[in-house]
Amino acid sequence: MSKYFSFELQHVDKHTGARAGVFHTPHGDILTPVYMPVGTQATVKGVYPRDLKEAGSQIILSNTYHLFIRPGDELVKKAGGLHKFMNWDRPILTDSGGFQVFSLTKLNKIKDEGVYFNSHVDGAKHLFTPEKVMGIQENLGADIIMQFDQCSEYGYTHAQAEQAMERTSAWLERCAAVKTREDQALFPIIQGNMFDDLRMESLRRAKPYAVDGIAIGGLSVGEPKARMYEILDLMRSELPTSVPRYLMGVGSPDCLIEGVKRGVDMFDCVLATRVARNGTAFTSKGKVVVRNGEYREDFSALDASCDCYCCKNYTKAYLRHLLNVNEMLASMLLSLHNITFLHKLMRGMREAIFADSLTEFANGFYADYGE
Picture 1 (cartoon, rainbow, N blue to C red):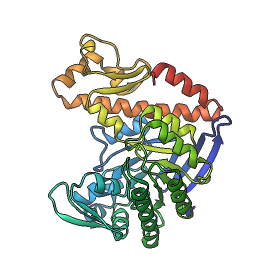
Picture 2 (cartoon, helix red, strand yellow):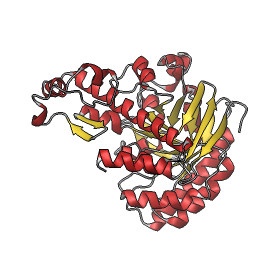
Picture 3 (tube, helix red, strand yellow):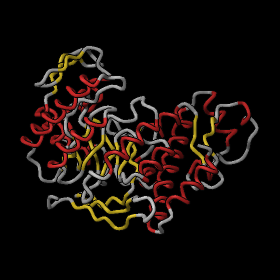
């Protein structure tokens, strides 16, 4: 590891191999396993930063593509970097924008040199190369930065997936070659779609660059959950043990549990705030769709076992009313609750790992949650 980062593996669950550790970064320590809320546009939608801290958020994400488009990485650099720009003094991770370039831009052309694309905002033409993406992320100044990769879609043929994997590997070399800031940790990304041989080859090529951490990409993109778990099982014994392992884009409660059981340390997903805006809450008794008519006269708390601001102060009936009249407070309260719920879940798993009882914890969670 570099002098700015270190990972301390504190305990491994004797029955599952799940890991509990501490990731030391320039902006503070991260206790793992950890769920990381996503703040795509330099803000977690609908949640005050002070409330994120109170909920237990140790690190948040922002997105290279979106911040490049608006307001521009040079402006963020002039502001003193993302930490000062968004007034967040804890760790930040920026993803490379690779997924957005492929998913949001209707017009793109993928070449070995990079990706030509049109902005989803104004149609302006741009080129993302590994070198360009590294420069943007250095301007943004996050603690953890991601290599530029090609995330292949679920349903790709072996030949298509292999081409994307080869490109990702070549782009990793280029990213590492131009990285200049020692106070940023570069995570390589394992790709390979749903093919065992490509996954293992991508992992083999990524490992030499896993100085501070390693990421698993291209999962939770439409494949059956069972297949995702099979791939995690496949790679598990070959993943580095001395750095954090980050499973990208995964954040449903069941997937968090299954990922932790398979030795993953870090997770992120927009799911918690996205479903909140649609009126869905994670609770200790399962998902609650607050908009449903059955809650019209339900004057109980959203989750009796939760101590977040939402659950301590408001009822399901009130939340349903806010949703039905399109008041933004509904999204704010439900987003805060869902993030708090996932942080509590991660803390519970961490405690269970130290007690070598993660299996019992997971079984108890599923019995109440219903998945």
